[in-house]
Image (cartoon, rainbow, N blue to C red; front, side, top):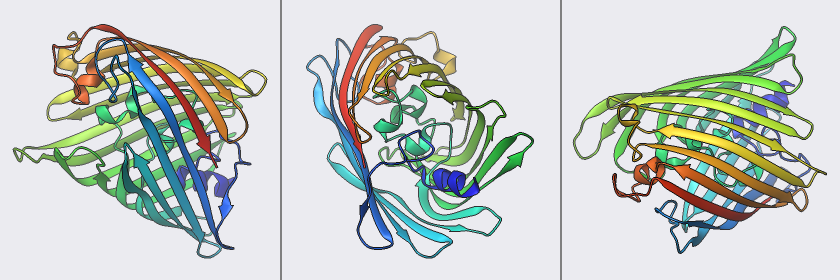
Length: 347
């Protein structure tokens, strides 16, 4: 149990923790080096407002590609490097070495995704979740769950009563891939995940804090975030709910969602999500700073490596376009729709 859980948590590896098929293909480059990959191509359109580069004319620039290289160094250690490309820009997403201490924790050194909530480690792997677009909690514009860190992390799991407890701890500094508005330093955080005696039911608490400095003004703040998660996955049923809270620069953001998916005949997966966010609780009555979305979608899995998604987001408020810098506060339409269709793959 320990090897499976720690490997999944350390890498966010999509074949294990996220519910993807463990039989997904891998390319053996040498005896000890493997290549995995995932990505999607799709189309987004809105009937009003602009978000994720989409408007009434739509956008075909909804695509990404990741290549993950793993190299077995010895029986206790492995190296991980992931190259990720989105919107035509490539970056190194993961680059770390792990080491499994006998009867002890798994150590990681380098750059890895923050172990926060249910989706942060697999946030870019569309194949790993029911919907095309992530819940607000994990979308880049909110900056509620920083995507990665450089530093030292460890993971340990053990039996607790009739269940299983996994805990993560890490320290270093946050990696910001897109925004250059802030400098990040002094990050520390952790996560507790409890697999309950109820088959398929998991509860999780994640938290982190780091220092921020505004590049333009030099103003500093302590960013604090925490996420409470519940996950019930059994047979064809997948239920998830999360609540996130973040404070920085005297502003408080809050988001929560509930999501349900059910797979029919191992192919068709209808899903429904209700998502809410306020990026500034002091202005939560202003549609520029809140957004509610009802997401209705349908997924189809061609095989263990290829899937198709079609979904519509019925939005009230436009906090996400404002947070992303694609619209100015006070200029948007309160009620609007976004439609997404995507082809996702994994190997």
